[in-house]
Image (cartoon, rainbow, N blue to C red; front, side, top):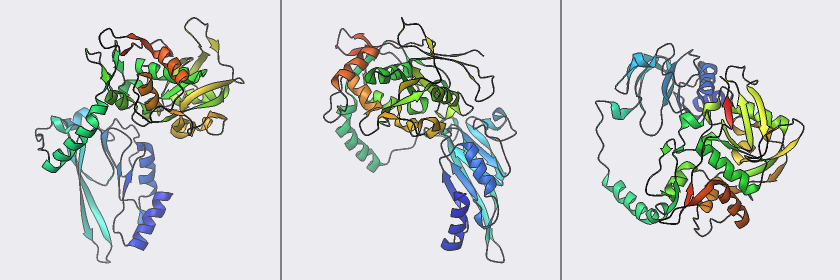
Length: 396
């Protein structure tokens, strides 16, 4: 294991007393590392983890992989008050500190030197905040004058760009992680429709982890701006096209509804109707998979031996998040020639910054027709109004 090899190297070659790992792995992987590197010269003393968005900790020997559980064997309600987790101490091996600058972990290592010269951690003391703004200790911090000046200069340079009005929405656009990573949402539908229409593909798949706004974007009298679009899709993921068999497509959708779906692998889709059952065994949850080319055309069952053109992010096309079924299949549009998700949305809504236009005008127009439903009477900006159509349905 890489972690053990590195821990051994750091102790033997660099003279380190302790090895603390900064990880960006799922909790299950961090637990595996902690348990496999628990003793001796290859020990990883503490893992400060990311990826999961929850505040949590695990002691030596813990096996609980649900990241929503703060402490194994204990109800969250019993140990959290006013956003603060009860302080704990002991052989703590894993600490995760939440997201969006609300969670916080204060870790104190109590160490001593043994007679033979080796150092040991006697205990780890931990105080955690699930939401520090709810704590009685919270008070807004004053901003450093140097940072304030720097931020003002940056804001002056980019403010006029990101505040440019682009589009109106008639309906709330649901990009909440808690929703889009486990069910169909209208925002997911809009994105998938744009990708499919741009390439004229049979199907488009949008991994929900690529949608980062984590909020409902409400209809307002003022339009959405460039910054709102960037907030939805900030990574500029290339949207590639592959030739995918019905069998591989079925395998991919099973991965979408696997037990790890909340990490961002859950798929929003266009051109597909999916019926699934959460109660079935993992790997056997897809009950029905149908191709739907238009609202007026009848759905056709996906044929395992048939080939379909599928638009998807280069991230999942490369096999990440468990989508290994896409790695070795034929690519029609690779990431070097692909439009990006961010760029496509900005171009659909008329943003024409020099150098952004990486898409074909005809393709952009086709994508625009797929998601724009009208023009605002006052400012002539485009209007979107995506809905939930029942593309992804769960029977239980």
